[in-house]
Image (cartoon, rainbow, N blue to C red; front, side, top):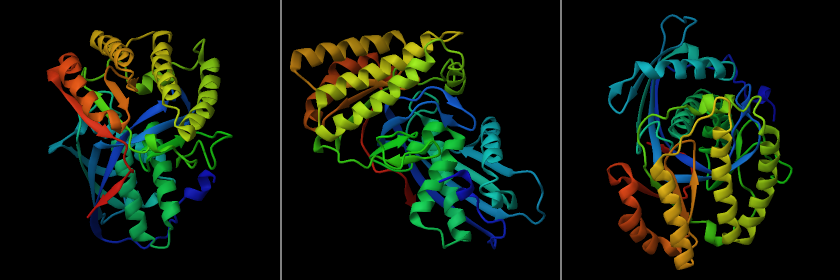
Length: 361
């Protein structure tokens, strides 16, 4: 598909008012993307687990304008408080998507959202947040044009979400989603995320993810800035090629149920992501001392217990602990007894692989 396929008709019959609510999850990349080109296209493909408990719930209320002004009209309410500081990001998002959903200029919107996890703390809040808004906008388009198919609905939602936050396009569906064109992934595209279509071994079907909240504060360097620093990065070309190769490796791992290979690949990808940050110009470090303490503890526990526990990291200090469901009880005990002390206020979130966006009626 091309971008032209996603342009809505400018002659849709508009409804007067209404609202729609969607819950969309965050996701955790197994093979990371770091670096993008305009407009919000990835320099390398990525694959992620869709999460379940770390989610955003967004209600989009809309009312048709009496006079069709050229400006967008919207108000953002986050967890009960109006958030003018969020306005510029949504304004930019609307500017990027208006060619595909021109009807948004005909409405005044109230966007009300709440997260099940701390905002801007490295749990991909922009992924769940932007995907939730995109699902709501697609629901509005469906109201205006009931003829659109389910396949088109979800592909376009992912396409729109990508224009708000790259990783958001991986939060529309589950359980595994690939974003970025890759020869081994059927239907893959730089324009939207696609469900991983190959057979997945049973052990990965209900994989667990506990997020250790090492630092709930704002990141020192935003992901947007970090992505931009890949332009001219001395190791960027090799990194992009490595990620392409790792997608092929991950496909084989998921099909075979090769957990030990999964561990090695996932942890290498996490550390490579942060290595790219540390070798950018200017360089920066998002890991905290407790991040490293947790990693060392995980390695020791795995060796001592012949466990299949492993870690991954997003662009932040928090640690995602991945493990098969069969080890859930023992690893929960390990987290509570040995790892929670390294978390801010001993706070962590137990999560698992989920199925993607859900409408709330």
